[in-house]
Length: 357
Length: 267
Image (cartoon, rainbow over all chains, first blue to last red; front, side):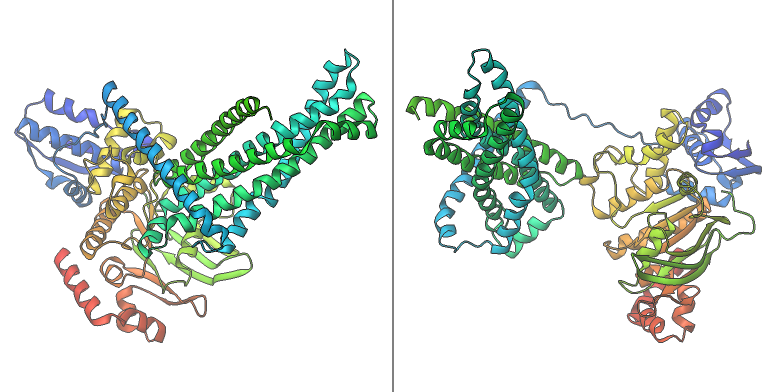
């Protein structure tokens, strides 16, 4: 006979699951019965105790007579299985060779898929130019707004500051040789050849590439992409192409804008802090920067735009379906975007050096 | 489970809810008795879920009061609301399990946050809650691996984790096959009887309403207020209001016959 009394409330009295074991090992009885006349308020705490007791009784071969329990407790006990099932811990541990192998296979198939994506895009260039692709004009315009006009403030801030920093660092060094005047050349060449394209691409990778990945990954989670596939709308035309087209066409414009504000930033610092004449600075910049250098930067910016857009879309498409996967997709897209932009920039620099541009 | 004196478990007085200036429902008054299963009914788009949001603290009402055990829910500080809210268990329409945690961790998190229990006790409670809802061996699985019905059950286990006084359900049987829906109904009844919990559910599934609910309120989309009070069965049989009558009897004969059979079978 077990006499239950008092309150059994989880948050006040805690729970006594282990007491069940002690109760049965210390006493020998053939039947467990209950007396609940003095039982106060109770909740799960009582049920956990009774449940453990019942499992223990079954193990020891003791009969469990629940007639004395309150009817509602009997009802809850009836819902729970006789055995207390432990919550299993997942043990999916892969051995090293297996993991390496899986990674290699995944890497290979990923590469094939990216190449296919790039190939599809190249094949689409002609229909896009003729205005016959399956994408909607409004989608492209929306994406272009997002990736172009809406990005202007941050592009301005970053490029002005980079121009200013270049001028400052350059002027401090050049002044020692009495060559402060060349700060204009330094800012002009650095901004036009490298910094404007690179900084803008990095900004767009963090801002737009990440957004593409998160957007497409969320669509994946909502089964929107499945719905597109079922209806027979090519995911590529509808989702990816507008984004790639928009970002690739906006990047050169942002680049030119970045050059202008970058040089302006350098100009302000040089004129205000190092007493360079405004006219001298402008004249010096004009002599240092020529059309080829703009072309070089422009080409880079187009390539960077395409790479960032592809990375974002690709990562979004292969993301999983949970909330955490969306976050991971955004991070991955940004990392891939930034790393590949910088790596490509280095490649461009080597090529330009070899070709003597 | 304690029953709050003479007060109704949940008292709603002249409640108006809406978004911005647009009132979705206005001047609602009803009382939920302790230990009852109370239905908020109405057609799609009449504002049932919005009313539920106000009840569970997600949307501040534009006017009126909501009392829990006689205490004004929205009058106090956020802290006071959170304390009251810990007596609630909510099952969202799709389960709303936290996707980055296993099912067991989903159930355990409220216990870890709001009780001083040690890990062994929490484990025991999690096992119990998962067993009660029929998922005794699925604790280690991730929400993404579960079917829709299992997600609801897991969500219910989480709603039960703190031994709530009031359980709220948003469309409990939506998206379930008739068998699973009936089993979930039985489970709601059994848990109500077992824990003596008060249940408030939002639904328009007639079979469920007739089987499990013993009180309710009918919201109308047109007049934006309650047009009938009482148990769904009474509304079906006695209510003369044309909207309520049409709603309750639309799939009438078949739905009600089947439910009567179910009710007899389970009772």
